[in-house]
Image 1 (cartoon, rainbow, N blue to C red):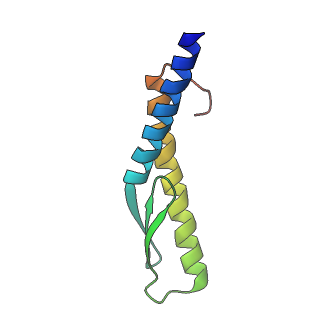
Image 2: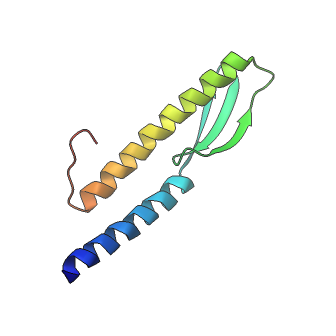
Length: 90
């Protein structure tokens, strides 16, 4: 019983640590003259539109989100592997 509680607490700590790591991982994506700086936790840190159209801005933000999601998935795969979890599709 206490082993299960310890495992749950360990998982919570790992999840919190992963969340902090994702927030610390920042990438910059430049697309059609728009520069988006975004964390792997999907928080936009900065946006330089350079006077581009709304369509270019949306496309750049969407591209940045996809790149950040890829980075987050890669980090999560590593964390899950460290826990001995192998989840197909991750």
